Length: 118
Picture 1 (cartoon, rainbow, N blue to C red):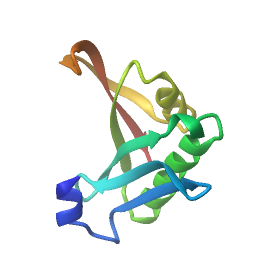
Picture 2: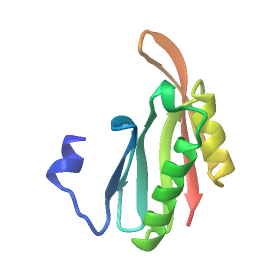
Picture 3: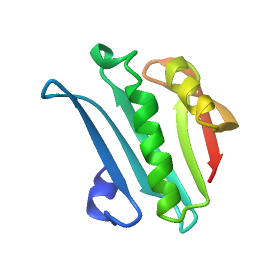
């Protein structure tokens, strides 16, 4: 996130912070990866705001922004255990491109790279 802040380009990158009753309950970011590829980063939805469609709405905002900014592809990295997030990505048209085993947070996980052609 420090690179995002230090090198922020408002024409090519954006962030959204979601509030519910004055409390921050979610966020998401679009960051430049290259001239043609953007990265969807840090989709977070507080448990108290889940089930309201917030995650889906945040992802849709990223897709719309990335298209307007002229990117041809939007990519993201997640873990296979994040089933709700993966469901949103699949529903929005992302496809699973790469899976890789890794050890993080004290457990063996499967990292996934998803892509959406814009």
